[in-house]
Length: 251
Ligand SMILES: *[C@@H]1O[C@H](CO)[C@@H](O)[C@H](O)[C@H]1NC(C)=O
Ligand SMILES: *[C@@H]1O[C@H](CO)[C@@H](O)[C@H](O)[C@H]1NC(C)=O
Image (cartoon, rainbow, N blue to C red):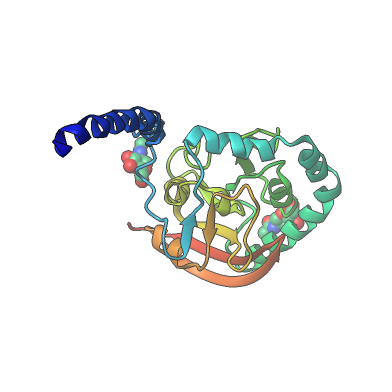
């Protein structure tokens, strides 16, 4: 008797509570992450291998396109371009002239060298190369600045194999795919060609950087067909280390 009387109220509560909780279940399911959204279309995303140890790729780039847009944001900044071409111009060229004269004394750079500056912005390094007598020199950047800098992505240099005797860059930290950055240098250097990189090891570089480097070891590993010529401390606009490679003649 007791059981028969108790059953209906229990059922009532059960049905009532189901109705009350139903909206919560709905909410719970709608909050579950959707795995099929935002699948990346970047074909190069699988190439990235150096994201541990002393070289870390910064997270947060959803696609190669968003990375390029962010780099352009800095390169096209009118205030920065104004500073680069006026206040910074002579000061930077003087420092680069010192660097390049030193490399000439060490016989790593010659008047006859065909030279490339990678990530050259408004071309101060190219101007400095020309002033020390390296007349056949040019720069590449995402935004051209004629006649010193032509348009080109350092992940995919617009040059044939074995084009240059000398390549310089101080924008390694902007590379989203460091091994492509290095691979393109080795591809476009002639045998015996020299690559000079200025990098920051002790200081974290700017908010537009795509990677952080903590030692020269990852660089040395990425240069597959080159030998280290020297590593030394420099004072290069926040970049503290000069690493010089020479491409081998027989690979
Ligand atoms: C290289 O070029 C500079 C500047 O034009 C010149 O002063 C120098 O004599 C040249 N050096 C050689 C070895 O030709
Ligand atoms: C250029 O070099 C790359 C890498 O070293 C190689 O895979 C490619 O076949 C070369 N291309 C030509 C046209 O020699």
